[in-house]
Image (cartoon, rainbow, N blue to C red; front, side, top):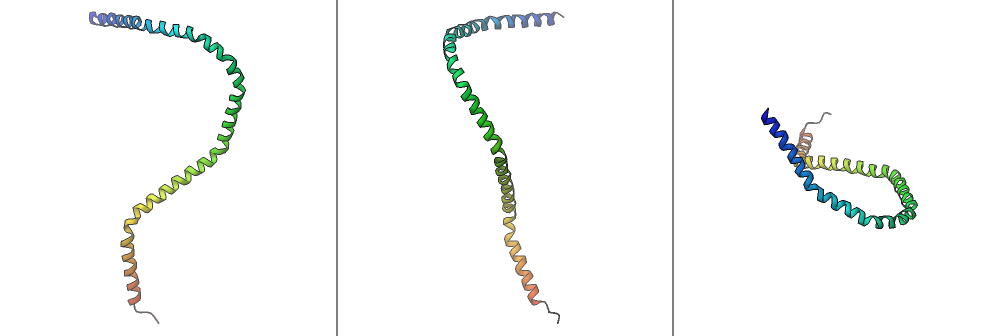
Length: 117
């Protein structure tokens, strides 16, 4: 029980020290927000002027995205199918000499077989 209490006390001290170490950084962030507040307020009218253009640009981006999405998906599907077919051809390509030998053997067999009249 004493070990548990010592660990709890150590954890509380650790959190207190971490809080004390974080305090200057929090104060620095607060000072920076106060310093840059006039600049943010200065940009507010420009943001309000640009807002309709940003909304219009977002609308056109969404519109063209919806219109071009099927085309892009079709191109991706065709590319995946082409990659799959080319992989199969690459796997079968080393068997071409064996297939040619079998074809020549079949031709010889067929030409030497007696024909039925």
